[in-house]
Length: 149
Ligand code: RB5
Image (tube, rainbow, N blue to C red):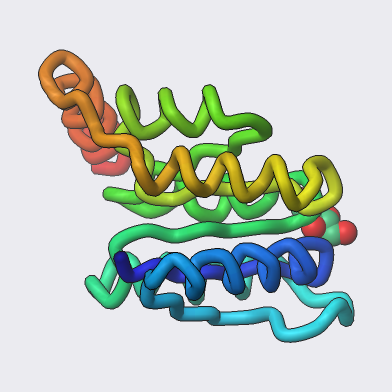
């Protein structure tokens, strides 16, 4: 799978661990930074990753900041992006099954590497159930278009 990764300084070390894991698993990884633990602004890196999803270069995204909250706020501003902040695998499973989440967000200051990898595995291996959940996702797009017009 083609996966875009982004983090700020607070998510940098976890991003590197996740990148190693994904490459070992045979995924194609696009890393849009940041490239060190020097302080940067998370919106810039979140946006770089979202661009890759919106232009079709990546199928899924994984964004990491300190809490995951800032990156979630950034990602969910864009139509067609469904970003889920997950702290354990059950949320990641439901984010895929019910919400067809295409972006996983992690809090680099909140979870350990082992937990993060389990969340990523679940996020990448769980299918969307469709049906009534598809109707609800369509409603989100429809209602947000109405509220912007
Ligand atoms: C950076 O200090 C921190 O604010 C950022 O990583 C993130 O947690 C924001 O939501």
